[in-house]
Length: 399
Ligand SMILES: Cc1ncc(COP(=O)(O)O)c(C=O)c1O
Image (cartoon, rainbow, N blue to C red; front, side, top):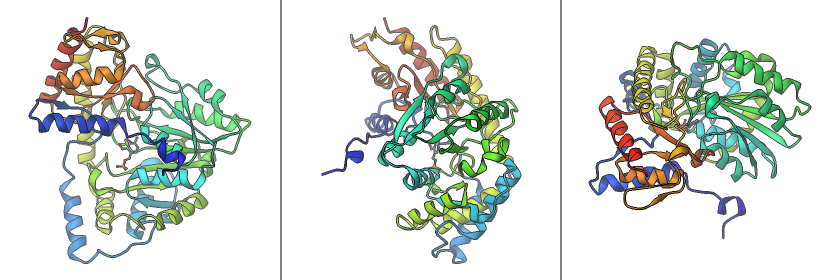
């Protein structure tokens, strides 16, 4: 009944673990849920008020498919202000979340067998969306010792005549790896020098505003303006403004690509809600101090959790530069046995065991990196301490 690409589509391991966690919580078990990639803060008040105003004043009709002019103007100003990327509303398309923008970019360009290069660990949706459209995932290895940063030589050797896309996501979900301008320049150098010049670069900046230790955020289209005609920069309001449910994401890139993506969107959902678009414009144009304060809170939580994790023997946790995830190396614990005699053979078994012990995490294999786990620290200090207590006890009890 199903087409080949759809038949092999997996359920997202994040959603599977989140669902198992919901079931456990419904059963009344005490679980610290660290599975979801969603800030725990409310949407800023002025954003909600802008949405209410949009409803009351009748901004409730169809907008242009690529997004309202007001929102695209706000996005163009944002790219100029934050990223020094000059663009006009015509270079931008707005989708129902960054996810839809990525979906349309791949649908617009991928032919069966085209390679999509993605540094691992990666957000699983890149691989799944690419494979839905016939793309072939080429996972680029990184190491925890290098903070999961892609090395230019790895990129260089991975590019072939079949390469259609390179995906760069910084700060990264799930590792939190944040590239500096110098690291991005090194990638740009590899791209320029490659024998193969027919591929595009998807730059996913959705965690742009969650960068720690005062490090400046950098993006490829800023450090390599000569490559702009090959770069699709994707961003959105979900993570920066705690607006995951509003479903607004956007992309800025070469006009022909943006137009093709918009044509596709016209036949899917036309556009995201007009009210959400008004809210997103208010978020981008309004005061940004709450965004900075929330970044400080995330940094504090990262430090808290890292201190606790570093005290757990044999748990190796690279220090992330941004986002709100830790991605510890748990390979030292695999092959051990739980107190009830279950062998913890892989990261999936470990995630199941940890859920039973009251901490819900996502196995790294869901991000193309078995032997690791991802924990989202978008929760309160008390919950983080509880999670660290439970994790330490659970790992200690493995023999
Ligand atoms: C790396 C990355 N990119 C894009 C998205 C998509 O976010 P949204 O569709 O809410 O804009 C997510 C959401 O988890 C993400 O982690």
